[in-house]
Structures are given as structure tokens and as C-alpha cells.
Image (cartoon, one colour):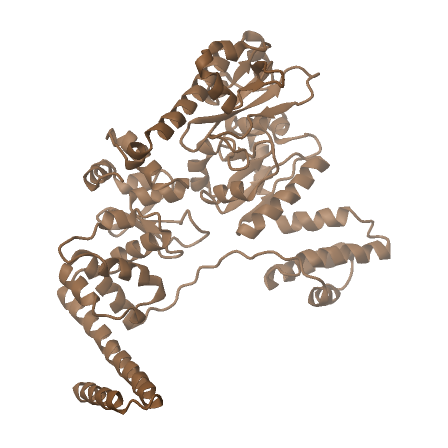
Length: 569
């Protein structure tokens, strides 16, 4: 772990409002700042940042913490990586326990990153005039070529191999930059290809994609194989660039290819990302969800692209995404070509008119049948109903009207099918609702808040049975009563905890409660009153138990205690 003094030094370098504002547009409201939460869909802002307390909290979904916790959540990175990124920006040197405990593993990982970085430098340095002209002819600017670090793998079996020393060959093989044949010959994996470096969320090169320059090559695109640094099913191309803008814009643009994404960025659509040569995976979808709840799928307009869109929907919908589908007109084969021929303004119109995924799916079904034929109409309707069956009643109502027009049949007939048809199992997204807070809940929050900062309050908290603490706050209760009387609570560590539930509750307490002697006393009195009722019920239970066991002596003693509590109340 990094010591608290260093964490405070890093934190003191930043204004949390300015830092969070890089990702979330904020407006001043009283002493705090409000914005739409980046961690769940909402129309009314409930995401609050307190400059005085240096924390954030969403009153809609419960996410909260300090600057370390925010960076962890928004970029989906572990605590130590968040600390390192902030320390680097703040100019603070850190020495973490993992590096101390695992020096060889850390050194090896750093070495692999260095080899990838030097390999990218090699490919960039080999970008000759002919290949540069090819990229310029594809519509890319010199600035874009540089921004994305594009390069060239030369037409050589040992260009990259000879760039490194023999001692580094095993690491190059481990990264998949070199291949060893069955006969033991070692040679370059990438040859005569435009090279696209792939970055992780920390802007480090983890792998490469290569596009063939020779049309005779069998594989048009080739990616690095999985390695200690790279797993193509867990990364997204250009997410390192798109993540901040996605939070601001409220959506991600999911595309198929490197060139689609690069063109989109060049034309100002810097929310574009792509999966890496595979169908979209759940891991990639979860990664996207850290930055946006809304995804606009912009795959190729051909049949293969539309089938891939359906597969992507099947991955995204169970995770609760708001999914739209951008339709590429027949005049262009993919987003890259459309942008070059029609421009950014027309592409923006396509984004604005992107179909809700339900309408896209229903249209796909309708177009696959000849609904002028009654038997095919019935099969098409059955498939549409199966798709809609387990969606919300509101969505069913709207699409029932749509299908009624398309099929030219009565709306009630559609609804009848919906009542009896087979279900298309899809998980619905979460809804955040607020409940009125009781006097006891407010008291619970006040005593827990007091215990965060005051040893005497923690002593009183230990007298309160765990059964009287709500499930939501039981974890912070147990954490606080475990702190020795002589020690203080490291609130900063709790706010940056990897435990999302714990960090969220601590930020909620810091926002909603306050240290006030009278309020704290009243809060403890409220809980003591509940304790009295709890004690009476517990004694009644024990008396019944003693009577059932014919333990009259114990039952008599417990009855005396019960009468004492009755007389005191």
C-alpha cells in the first residue's frame, strides 16, 4: 500500500471539481456542484461533488468516494493504478508494496511494455513515402497518422527481429511479435502491413493490428496473439482516447474496423471505438459501460454487418445498455466511406436518426419474410412477438402499434399474440428509485458519521447490536467497531476503497450527515429507544426458550430483567 501521507500529498495537488469536470459537465449549486451521473442513466442530475469535503456522491445509484475512487470507477482501473496515474500528474514519486514484494514480475511486465513501445517506434520509423501516400489517399491527415501512431511493418522476414538483440528474442516471441517455426526458425509475424498500435486505458502499447498492403495476402487484418499484456476479447480499439468524450457526450460509437474508428475521430466523432477482430464480447461491453450507458452501433451496411449488429445487441442488452443502430445508406459500404463521401454533417444526422434496437430488430425480421403471403405473415408475426414478449408493457404497446401498421392487421390481434406468444428472454436494465427516509434511518446515518471521526462515538456504537443496523450500512458498522479506541479512522482510504458498496456508503454519510453534538445525542437516543424494544423482544424470546426447556431458574431471572426494562421505559 502507498502510505497515507503520500496519498494526501497527491490528493492535495488536485481540485476535485476541476478533475471530475474533465469527465462530467458540472454546474454550481449552492456550495456543491451537480451533474448527470456517469455511472447510471438519469435525466435529473443527482451526481454531487463537494469541493469542501473533496468527495463525490450520486444520490441516484449510490456511487461515491474521493478522487482516487472516482478515477478507479470512471476508468475501470484498480486502486494502485489510479494512484500511479494521479501521482504522475501531480509529480509525486511513489513506491508501492506490490513493486517491493514482486520486483521480478514488475520488472518483466515493464520490460514487455518497453519492447512494445520500441516496436511501435520501429514501425513508425519505417513508414515510407509510398505507405504514407496510401494512408493519405485513404483520406487520413498527417496529424491523424501521427495521433494514432500508425507505422509500417516492412516487407522483410527479420526487420523487427534484427532491430532487437538476441537476448530480447524470447520476450518478442512471448508478445507474438516474432514466430518460431516447427523447424526452429524465428521470423517477424508482421510483414508488409500498415501497423495500428493498440493501447490500454493508461495509453501503453499492449499489442498491434496489421492491415495487409498486398492484396494477395490471405489475411487482410492480423492482430497480435494473446500475451501477458494483451487479450483481444478484453480490449477496445481507441477507448483510451474515446473514454473522456464518451462521458461528456453520453454515448459510445461502436464500429467494426480500425479505419472506421480513425476516420470517425478525424471527422470529430471522438467517441468511436472498435472490437479487435472478434465479435463483441461481454468483457468489452462491461468495459464500455464504465464510460457510457448508451451505445450506437455503426457497423457495415452489408448483410454480414447487420448480422454482427444483431450479435452485438445480444451482448449489450442483458447489461442494460440503451442501444441504437446507425443505418449506413446503400451509397457507402461502411462508416469510413460514408464520412469521406458525405462528410461530418451528414454522419451526425445518421447518429441523430439511429434506430432504437427494437425497431432495427423488428425491421430485420419483417424484411426476411414475404408478408404478403398469409403463412409467412403469421411466421413473421410470431417471431416479432417472441422478440417483444418480455420487454416492458410500454415498449410492447408502442411496437404493437408499429406492427399493426406493418402487418395491416388489428392492434388487438397483435396484443393477443403478445399475451400468448413465447418469450424472448432479455434482462431489463436497473431502475433507480428513492424511498422516503425514516427518522431511525437518519439517526443511523448520524451515529455512523460521528463514529467515523470520534472515538467516543465509536465506543457507543459498539454497544448497539448489529441486528439494529440496516444491511446497507452493516459493512461500515463492522469496520468502525473493529477500529481500536486509540486509533483514528482513515476516511480517505475508505472513500478510495475497492469495495464499491463501502466507498458509496461512506460518501453518502459524509454528504448527508454532519457533526453536531445535539444531533448526535438525539440520534443515539433514537437508536437506544429501538434497542430497548429490541432487548425486550430478545428477553421474551429467551424466556420462552427457558420455559420450553423447563429451566425455571433462568426463566425467573430473565423475567426480573424484563420487568426492570419495563419500569425504566
